[in-house]
Image (cartoon, rainbow, N blue to C red; front, side, top):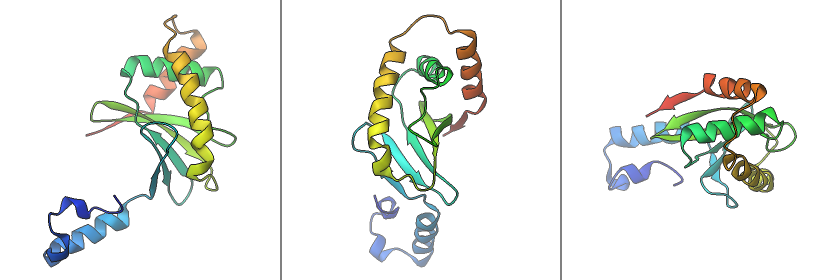
Length: 149
């Protein structure tokens, strides 16, 4: 959706209060683009830097272990100048977040995101105990996690 008008059954005939609320919601929304090469990944534009948010369907503990493995190995980025900064939970799903330089656009992360998905799949398939470095990386990721309802 380009705006929040879908919340209102008949936005063209809404009351002035509803119209004002929609305008405020639309003005506060972060411009977001859905990536096409991977499922449920979203490039987000903010004034200081851009972000990649990726809604992951994997069980949280398994996903955090896999992200920690990649992070400890220096393989968790989406390219030069990008960084996995943590995650949030929304509606029971874990959403890892990467910081991206402000000049990085959605199309710039399509290929790196697809490559990351392959690395993540391999890390998810590993069930070996985490190493000390991986445990530290996992602790850092979980310390920066928030829950959104």
